[in-house]
Image (cartoon, rainbow, N blue to C red; front, side, top):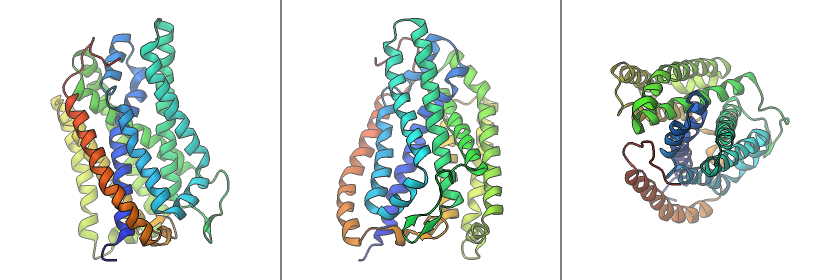
Length: 336
């Protein structure tokens, strides 16, 4: 085969996961900061900034999970039982959030609005925190014997994974805050600028602690980062991350409303690249590589034809929907 199909599919799945985190992360972030902004009209505006696009963002999660199942069935068979509890809780949180999103607009009384507002926040926190648990469980390593998961029911629950959960909550809150700065004005935007440095400080501190924690617990990660033939590339990651953080501080100081969201997205992309460097060539640390977990080339080639057809359509629809609903959202604007 001319093309390295396992790596192509690893790239496709990584792109789908990154797209989901970047797009649905701001939806979840809005839910996370929902309790900090009281007021029926203000919360209506917050929800209406994502009302036209939030459910479409889930497409990338489906693509990432479905792609893992089809292209790397061994990885799917090992990862799923290793993280069943947080995975199920995450899906329930996403369902609860979706129900709360729609039912809040249907509620006709203030108590109903308040109940569904907090349900929206609880579902968002559950989904975000569990995503951090899952990532943490994967990064810390999964016990494998032969081709099967050999760990226990609660191996995913450690101080490291719990900290990863709160780190993801902080990062999504930053993304949601930056999105609302871009999409709102007046009192909502003012309050977001007040909350912005808190979420930024928590996110940058979490990234720094997790980076050091990984280097201490996983000496092999040090070898990947500081290998002589790759060090000039890997050192760019913390430099760019620091630059993105500095840019976000500048945005807050200057009260710039246009740059926080793209800079927050760039911080996610840089962090994702850093995670990929730490794991490569393993798909499941510490021992299952991309090639070990990949389906036969014939299957990967067949699947690639479908992906080549569908992914451009999904991208085009996503870009078009965000373009159509660009601009500020104000009180009274809505799609329900």
